[in-house]
Amino acid sequence: MEEGSRILVVDDSIDSAETLGELLRIWGHDVRLAHDGNAALEAAREYKPDVILLDIGLPGMDGFAVATELRKEGLGGRMLVALTGYGEQQDRERTTKVGFDHHLVKPIDPDTLQKLIVKK
Image 1: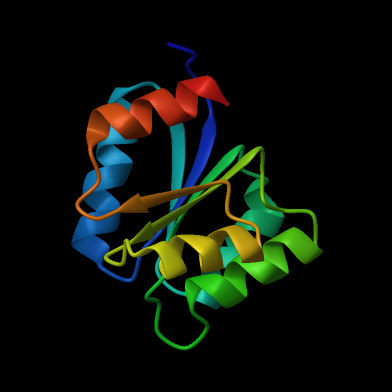
Image 2: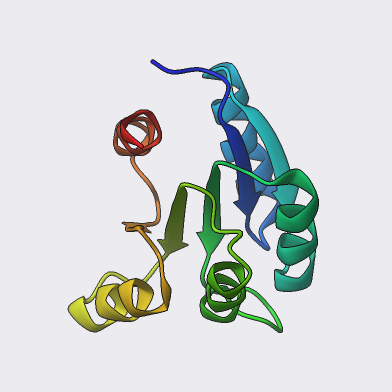
């Protein structure tokens, strides 16, 4: 596995973000956390992550708006991954339309996530 990717985890559930962040650190990645849309944009500008794991259901600025702004600013990293509870076809189409590379439905499968990060 390729180690050392810079990964930004954005989730308004602090417990979920911290748990996912810890798993990614165990896998050897450098991780930062953000818990709302504005914090995600600030972190992406400063941290310049390789991968952004972005919850869709954020308060205020949702994940769709964050993704749109990240792509507009060229800050989506090499991979922008939607994390959401919604997995219908129209949900997947919407994430693709705003610039997500992948759409993972919560609870995410660690093996699937690990393969995505390594695949780049």
